[in-house]
Amino acid sequence: MTVTPAQTDARRPLQRLLYIGARLSGARARLSGARARLWAPIAPLLAADDQRAEGRRRALLAFAIRVLSAGIAYFVQVALARWMGSYQYGVFVFVWAWVLILGGLAPLGLNIAAMRFIPEYGEKGQTAHLRGFLFASRAMTFAAATLMALFAGGALWLAPGLVERPYLLPAFLGLACLPSYALSDINDCIGRAYGRMVLALVPPFIVRPLLLLSAMLAARAIGLPPTASTAVSAAIVATWATAAIQMIALARHTGRELARGDKSDKSYAVRHWLGTALPIVLIAGFELLLQNTDLLVIARYLPPDQVGVYFAVLKTIGLVAFVHFAVGSALAHRFSALNARGDDRALRGLVSDAAQWTFWPSLAGAGLLLLLGKPLLWLFGADFGAAYGVMFVLAAGFVLRASMGPAEYVLNMLGAQKACAAVFFATAALNLVLNFALVPVWGLYGAASATAFSLSFSAFAFQSVARRRLGLDLAVWARPPVPIRR
Image (cartoon, rainbow, N blue to C red):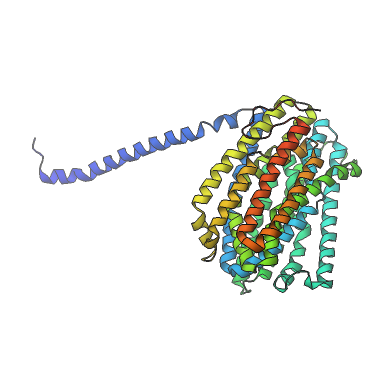
């Protein structure tokens, strides 16, 4: 049978459709195979029901939340820098650094202590102590933050020369964030202590930056000037709204957990709680100084635009640090619970796993961020890319710290908080001295060098303390740790 040209032309669309269908089917099969290969190492983590699998799942969830939050926070910072310019952005960064420091100190160490006491009281069935701790820790935190804001505001009123004139009004406004920021801080740790990573991490790390961005867009829409004062005012709205949302959500969860028994039955061991927490507040203070000293010293010697540029660099390469935070946040309560139960074998295995889960993602993340560093800095503005080289210096410090895993979480949860505080004190002092010595000479590179060296020093100091006090080798390259000494 002869096929005419007209019949051939009629068949061509059908042949094309069949060809396209075959290609789509092949692509679908390849996609399914790739998805299966990616899912293969994750599926056992989700299916297993042992304690180590639970720790992995929580670490994975915390990591996912922090990845999402890091992207959101980065986008918000880019938007702020683009809208305000490097000068006003630098003023805002300086004020927010003080909010982080003071707001982190206001919980009096009870935020970190919550991750020790809540699992401990839960394991031992001490419900009255648990109720008392939940109420008293929040009340003391809010009161301390309010008093701190009033004292700092009075100091600025009586001695306005404490800060340079461009920082004065935004600094006054920033103090209004302290009570709500501190309350979110302790609720964050209470949520982590219960293993509720969504309740703990989503409000401060996802909801708050989104509310900040929304408030800034509203300010821009009504014609407010793009200044640091406007940005701090938006931060006030965001911090208070976030604190309220998280408090309500967490109260519903803890209410169900404590539904049994007389709800008015509360037992207060305030002296014991504060005795445990005060060394931890020293740790928090020294750690906050370690995280922000470089910015504060740059503000002392360099103009606000350089503060903004350095913060953009730090924010970019600092994305590596959320791995350390995610693993520590997910596993801190497990360290405490296993220690209280006396399960040394499981505890040693978890410490070893934590080092692996911290180091390798941090190393990979640092390499990727350095590769993309220039275009990422360009997003903030044309004058930010000049500090690209500073990223390499800071990356070295973050990776070396990650090689010891979430060391401070391990020490705090296993009762070595005083030794941990001593390490942070020495590190913060070293960082302060190095910044004052190097920033006037090398500028931003001096600040980065001081911070990277200090991070490395703290990592090896934690390793030394863990080996001497607990018989644990925290390093990622270590053999399985020897039994914990009681």
